[in-house]
Length: 239
Image 1 (cartoon, rainbow, N blue to C red):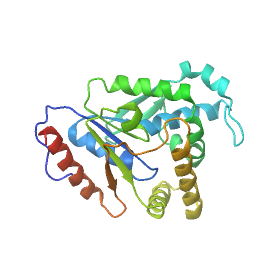
Image 2 (cartoon, rainbow, N blue to C red):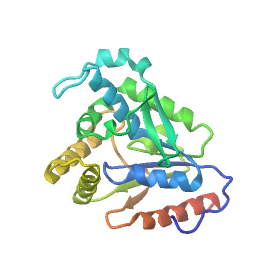
Image 3 (cartoon, rainbow, N blue to C red):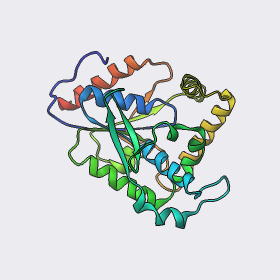
Image 4 (tube, rainbow, N blue to C red):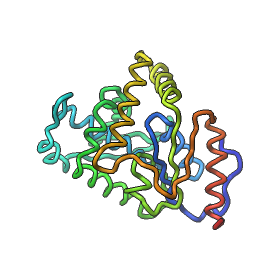
């Protein structure tokens, strides 16, 4: 996977990948991390885990948020990424519980944008993310990685794709997991998520000025890896 290998392997980098939901950011980031033997940090999974925590404690509903309750419990929220050798992937743990499957539900998806707007919560997540990235050698994806979390990242990618393509990908992903849901509902959820992400007061989704745009609407995973390998090689060789 990935075609040509990059040179100068001892020069560790921070690779920041931002973009819209269902663009394949996490898949792309995971593959990059595997190829470079870097740590993969799924920032979206961190916010999804917090959302699940709040749902379990009844701190969120369709019409309200119990922000005082959430803030009082921030110290009780611990998120880790644990490598599972059986599947060769990192999985998300919330307070020592594997919640990788639960945090991908449509209910969590519907609430996560509201949870992620809480300034104090975001500050805590950013603090944890920066601690992991101190020694570089990481790949992180999200919506504000190149603009807020790591504004000095060595490589910044902004991913996008058409709404229909993203909805189809999400539909196929859920179908493969045995979850049957209407395509149009998925599309409406994605559109609503885009609007919420772009217009939130705290760290809205936007492309960093020095980010490279990757529209992968009609690209295979292999083509994307060839594309990013060329960029990494140029960065490591100082060009």
